[in-house]
Length: 415
Ligand SMILES: [Zn+2]
Image (cartoon, rainbow, N blue to C red; front, side, top):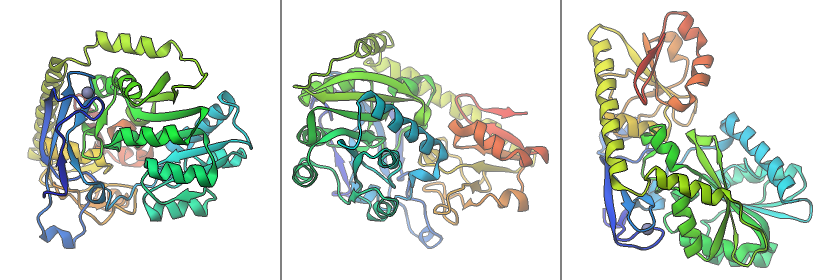
């Protein structure tokens, strides 16, 4: 396992050594490593899933880093399959073109551009774009849709090449990838090279405050290396020789931060939002270890209640299936130890996952047809942050007497 896993000794942002373990999910298989029928014969690889807090800069992070080649080997997530995200990025392009007067003269670059979901609305507005996407297959989808795409991991070396070929950028985005990157200082180095003096760098990351307040513990998995607060991000950009100029909250992934940063020599002014976020975070004691101990207890309580609910139903002879097999669902299933003794199968709309088995718990993933051919008495909504839309979509199941269970923050049966 030597090369597959690196154990960091110092904080990802400040390189400080005073980093303490605050949450532990135990050894866990990779959340996206869904198994084929044939792979069921083999043992799976398990990796530590522990969360650490840096006492110096306050970054909550994983220190056990699984090599990206292993982590993203079976990556099957294609953004545009989620209409919610398509709409999110349409609005994003609209807002940013207005706010920063982007037009035909501008260049927008997206790091981790996936199938081009973010850049496509910019293309429609006449902005020149370039996507950077390491996955060749997904990058090809983007190109076909008209989004110029480079197949590579972003680095300062790549940034230099891009400047030569395309010029410097007015806007660089990294939405929902920044938290997945180990060497974020290398990214900042590249961004500084690639950005025009008054260009803007925008990242979107899940917000630590939502993680705590909404009990989003299941967003802990090996791909997700950093759990950012504004305080930690401010420390990061300062250290990276950039400036954090504005922050706002957005609703994606149960609650995210949209963070604006510029080069240090930019004439763009900073907004008061940065300071007020940091003051609020101080009050919430995000940098204090005991905050996470309390949080850990809440998760344990949640686990005990859910297991007792599910096994109680099984004892009454009821059948239960799961709905939704997102990556985070596997943290929930593995950490709560919910297996095929409790859930007969899991429905997921992604054809890439159907016919496979969940990592660790090995529950079969099937299409929605199964709800009609083999309807369960109860449906556990594993993708629970999409509960309202999942319930609306499966009205038929409810009409026939089926009931929904929402697992967190407190498990409950929806009547
Ligand atoms: Zn630190």
